[in-house]
Length: 446
Image (cartoon, rainbow, N blue to C red; front, side, top):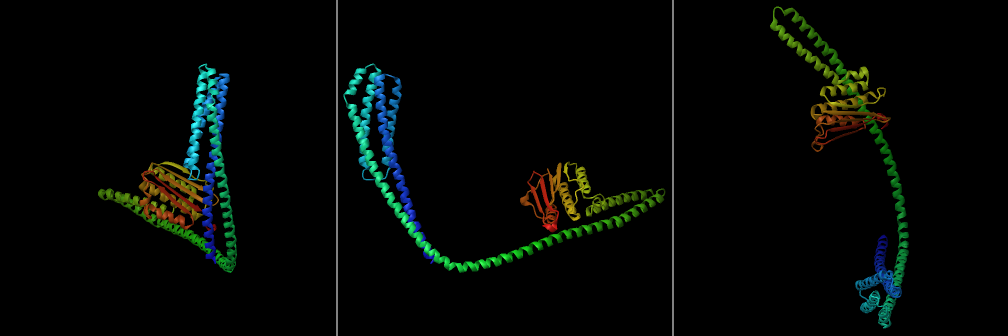
């Protein structure tokens, strides 16, 4: 049944399309004929204007009539060419050749009349007014004008007849098209009603299934969001655990290894004091050994700070972050642009450590690879997010050739994405590196 409805629709559309094309073509021809009629009327008007200007000049000798006379002749010739071109371009019809013949007769009459009028104008210009009037009295121009008007009116009448025929034909075509469309629509409506009745039961069943699927999707979506929140919370807890382990390890290294280094340095100093008079060579060696111990102490302090910056626990996150950035800029002789929020801005401890690690890793990468001379760090905090932007003017990176685990990028990205944030690195060779991170402040609310 649906196939029958579609077939009827296609047939109706096909016939309607053909009729629409036919009506469009008929409208085009009607427009051309109306244009031809307008042009022919303009032809008559142009000739009247030329004759009026001729009489005005002959009676008044005023130059004001010469311009309109010449313009009227130009217009009448132009309209004649326009009418002839329009008829020649039209599709073939019964009176086409006859009308072209009439146009030639009109053209000949026009030229005869124009010649007569120009002669009278030229005689009048030469002061031979009587001779000009004699030429007018010969009635040659009158005959030419009559012939012009006769054939122009005949051509207009024929065009009007053609116009009436086409308008009637278009009316018939429109009536057929309307009948076809209405009839096809009625049949189609009947078939559609039957199809709708047949499909109603299926629609009800499908609607019920869709409602069930929507409810199940809502349930699964809610569970997915809960699991996502749980995973992000676990990721935050994991990073907190990692930082706690780092803090514990740094404290143990500071206490145990620091005391060992200190005791070793004290013992070396005692030995140097005892043997400096009797064994100067040994003293020299011990002094060098003591310098190695100093280097070990410095390296131990560096490792402790890398594992867990003591300034965060001692002075808070913002002073520790500012110290990290200032020390890196001073050490690498960078021109620094730094924008930090107010120190009273409160942050979750784990969030602050994630932000610290991202800034720390970015500065380390800039130190190792960028060959930068300037660096800018912008940190912004609003009600929902902490936003980081670190940019340098170094050699840049070809992002298309960058591997995922290069330059600590993987670690920074995973830290941010694991808690539901966003991470982006933008770079081109020779244009530095821009790192952006958007960290949610309330992971449980994501």
